[in-house]
Length: 296
Image (cartoon, rainbow, N blue to C red):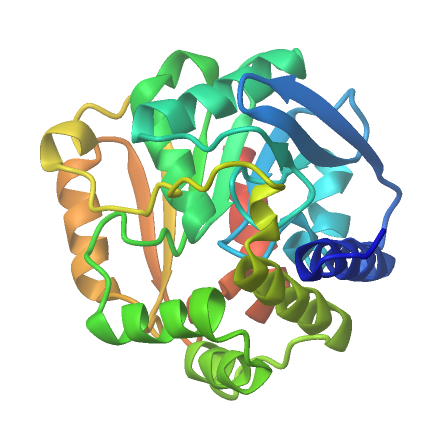
């Protein structure tokens, strides 16, 4: 039987994902947990005797993006790197969450399937949006929340971001545009590892061919949106927010100010010489902030 482009792109992506895992510096195991949205793929590192820390990746990056951080984080935590439903990764979904509440419902099902009791929750970019959204919907199921450059959560996206991300990740399929997007986001601060760049490119092609939908009827993913003040002020968890002065997708100064004003129990910082992809740009710095916050 002839292989379709979608099937070929899916195969290429899985191979690129596996190759990228060669960068993972510590032992890990992979599990799938079943939810009403499909089977969620998770990478687990560290002793299960240690406190659980859930890590949610940025859009298009998958759980492999945590490879620069995982050695240090998994020394004192049992880390669960979760492939977000509906994105290009190894999670096999039968449907996508259709609302913010459904997105939180999916994560709750993952936490229950893992039999975790009030884990800490951290997310970068899109993962940060999901983390804060979950803290609003199900505060009783988590402990502390860590937000790294949360996408579109505290401030609206700049128009330039929309133009770049949609043309790059969803429509063009051209690596040159992806390279331009990454240069815009990271500037000279960070050069992506070739294996991770290969996976990111394969994921872009996967979106292009729509095989990310695994042959299912297409549905829209939940895009990050600015969370209203009346929801922020009712957040019960201890929250750490890290924003970079070199953030390009929204105004970080305004985001920091708004978070400090409305989120009751927040430790918010604006970091110098750091941009949107802070966990990859300066992993030692970000690891130290995360672990110090968790140990308070």
